[in-house]
Length: 240
Ligand SMILES: C[C@@]1(CC(=O)O)c2cc3[nH]c(cc4nc(cc5[nH]c(cc(n2)[C@H]1CCC(=O)O)[C@@](C)(CC(=O)O)[C@@H]5CCC(=O)O)C(CC(=O)O)=C4CCC(=O)O)c(CCC(=O)O)c3CC(=O)O
Ligand SMILES: NC(=O)C1=CN([C@@H]2O[C@H](COP(=O)(O)OP(=O)(O)OC[C@H]3O[C@@H](n4cnc5c(N)ncnc54)[C@H](O)[C@@H]3O)[C@@H](O)[C@H]2O)C=CC1
Image 1: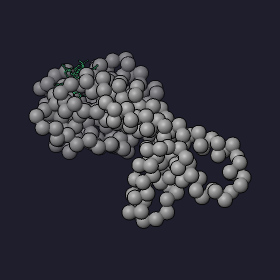
Image 2 (image 1 turned 45 degrees about the vertical axis):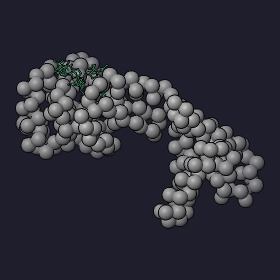
Image 3 (image 1 turned 30 degrees about the horizontal axis):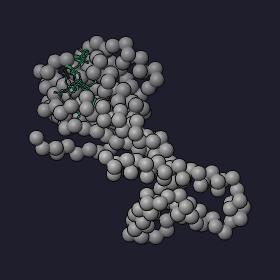
Image 4 (image 1 turned 60 degrees about the vertical axis):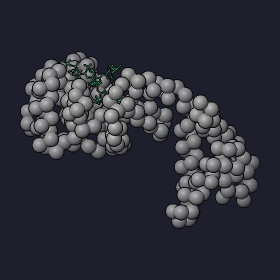
């Protein structure tokens, strides 16, 4: 079986999501969506809706809930749909209607009918990793999520903050930036804090106030911790 799924990272909060179904599976999908993109505009329609789904409305005011059978108008203005109904034939019919309205569709229990799958999602601050097993084993996707969440240190976010600072400080054309960022990360992965800090404080070397300030010590320890973590992650993977 080929693995031709193509992952993208949607700005879901700028789109409109239609969910049909209000049972356990709809709840699971909603939690995944809201956990990552809490401001998403969601219209949920289902004949019967479990209390846990209804309760989400209090915390996430952009969910509109309609307890009734779905109808054709529900597809208007939606960009994506997640279908979690307990009836395959019905799911197939809903998919056709959604397609006629140019929506991309996920049908929870029918991979063959899906335009997209939901992934298992690892989050560490700004880092996000989406995992798919090509539909073969959602349980392994979940286990991998747990493993990565455990082994990637929380300080990973500091690595990203530092790299963003460095990136913003670089002056030059695109090729120069690419070269510098590759050089910086190669060096720091190899030997760490000193060079990174010199680079980071480069434009403040002439500032005696900064050189003796608590701010400088804070920056050194922050850089040190974040790149130590980064090296630890990398060395771990190189050793297994
Ligand atoms: C194809 C896909 C389409 C889609 O739903 O998007 C799909 C399909 C199906 N799932 C089924 C069952 C389960 N799904 C889960 C869990 C998750 N399922 C998710 C995604 C996907 N599930 C897509 C493929 C992703 C990939 O490529 O790997 C996750 C990652 C994301 C999310 O849903 O948020 C989320 C984990 C989130 C997390 O915790 O990190 C569990 C485990 C549990 O709940 O503990 C079970 C029970 C155990 C088992 O079967 O493994 C069944 C059988 C239904 C039945 O038998 O009735 C089908 C239908 C079929 O395979 O035919
Ligand atoms: N992809 C996945 O992760 C998994 C998928 N599944 C499958 O997902 C499906 C849904 O599971 P549950 O949420 O547990 O089922 P459920 O029976 O609790 O929920 C089905 C929902 O569909 C609604 N519904 C039915 N007909 C409707 C209509 N005409 N208009 C509007 N709403 C309608 C019902 O009111 C209910 O809210 C099942 O078929 C199950 O096999 C189950 C486990 C995991």
